[in-house]
Image 1 (tube, rainbow, N blue to C red):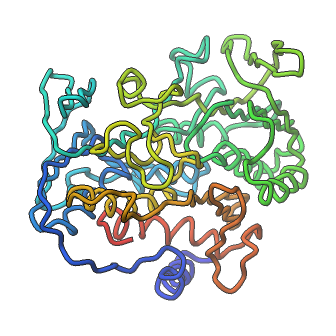
Image 2 (cartoon, rainbow, N blue to C red):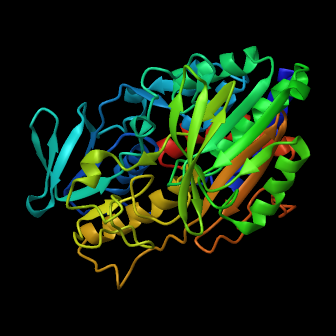
Length: 434
């Protein structure tokens, strides 16, 4: 399909279907007279969405965002960059353009918290006071936990598409690959979007078929998890995708080390009676790094034993500090960490935060988040499966509204991924209206 036709189709999708799919309606509420200094740690997806909503909801907003980066990236786009659909610049914009009018911006990193004294400590030693705190700094990429990786990414067949530059290098690696063993890995722990490691695996397969080298490639997907996907409903469909594409799958295989010179990967394999190490040679290796909440979260009084901000799974209020809330990747919410999850979490958090500011006990009046999340799984150029589910792991399909079997790989879903969702993100979600 020519780009003009694709854009026309995307426009139809956005105009006709998006209200049902992504809820791009402004739910008008009377502005609250509640007052209080609200500090938001993190100016990513969650932080900007919450800030925009608060600035709309409060009559006298006193909102400050603490965020060091001057660039804002649409991270779901990295798979598309790594498979040659878009350049990295397509998904990067200026952070300043999305700081809500009336909100303050402290361009520093956070070093710690003093919740007993209602203070955030920045890297310069500045102590920022608050009456209410929202914590959403995102996930930390722990590349250092993979032995032997230092300085090797982006060359000699070793890639990772979790940054703009990494995605660009991954595409160079996929495009230049001429055959051999191609490994794609997924760590055992929590990651951004549980389906992301599969997406680039599927897209690499598609490119290699297009370029005529797939019959010279042994493609392996090695996951540290016990199964391909957390939701059984979608797992079965994804297993069929792997089978159809001829991709070998290994489970309970957690990548712990690489030897770039030997082109050898070491996995810790979990078995019934313990663990053992297995080494595999590769010619191309794409790795999804281990991830966690940032160190300043893990080392703070706000964290649970797993290192995430400990909040109620429905109200998003902190378990021990009632004037603290959290959402997104660094929160303890037991759902897949995606932008779609944040889109549902943000209005719940803002409602509950404002009610708390008004002196209302959330046991009396609150909104509840039920774990909705979504993972757009691209499976080929022009095809995507939309996995939507909640805390129960049961499907909660919303698109397309006339066909609730969202396991289908369709071109309409592809347009949703490549055209509609990015537009909704920049023009709706980050502005507090989607």
